[in-house]
Image 1 (tube, one colour):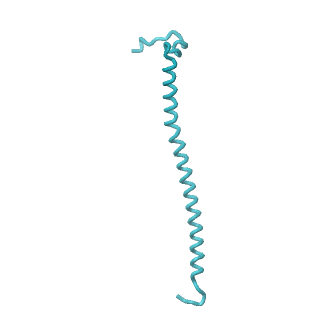
Image 2 (image 1 turned 45 degrees about the horizontal axis):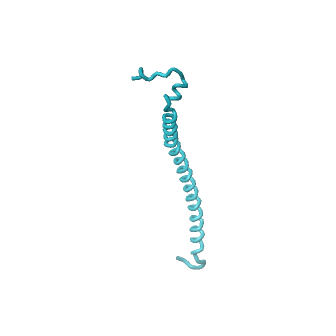
Image 3 (image 1 turned 180 degrees about the horizontal axis):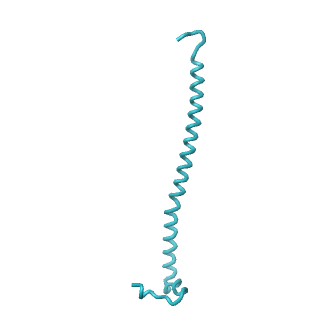
Length: 84
């Protein structure tokens, strides 16, 4: 199978028998395709993790604020001089 594929020099290999434009374009498109399919999920995962951390921090802060507000409302609801 590989016996018929013979190039006498590196430049002949790179020229691919006048099909260089087509062959190397396909290789470039394939390389871009592989890069995008490997790189984009990593970027999206990092963004997702960052967003989840921000949400968790925001929720924790909102929980503290609402707990403080609820504690303040509980103190205000007791009227001095009245017993329950």
